[in-house]
Length: 73
Image (cartoon, rainbow, N blue to C red; front, top):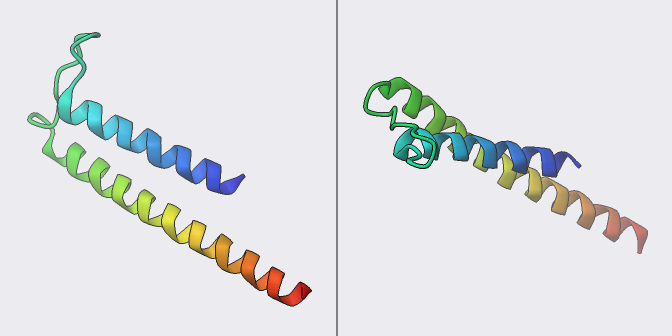
């Protein structure tokens, strides 16, 4: 369940970063990265760190599952 929450947080932050970078012409949202540079740097860094945390979390889950499997044999 926690892996799903971390993955959805990663997707949400990446979606916000993409809309800030490219805008959305369908709803008349303009790009904001050329106005607020700090916003794009912060959201980009948080998206990267969230992706890194997701990968580490999946590796921890796999290690734990393997450890439990090995003990049960």
